[in-house]
Length: 146
Image (tube, helix red, strand yellow):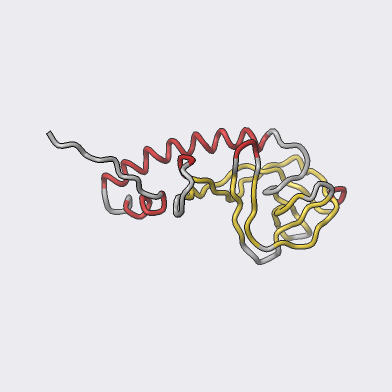
């Protein structure tokens, strides 16, 4: 009787292997079920947030931007044409990595009542290690800059 040892493969490598190996595809499918359940739980935290917050979407004229930092009474937005990444953590906390624009007072934003999907990532199966990000999208509130 042979015993197979459990192998831990980072999510990005598993995704690559799943394109050509049936065992990897089957394993990725199992991991994806876990990650989708984690995302649903993280979305509950996002939905409990009040007021404008990191990750939210902002329309300024024809530009679609995202909130990148919250200073309490002001927020910073993503720079037009620059990319970054939004890490989705527990309790609706979102952290941004990338370039920031100047802070704008929160009173300058109005809630549109709309929600939209926007890119986020978190550690696959909550395993914090390099190359283990699960890239997906979550639902965020939409604001208009006056």
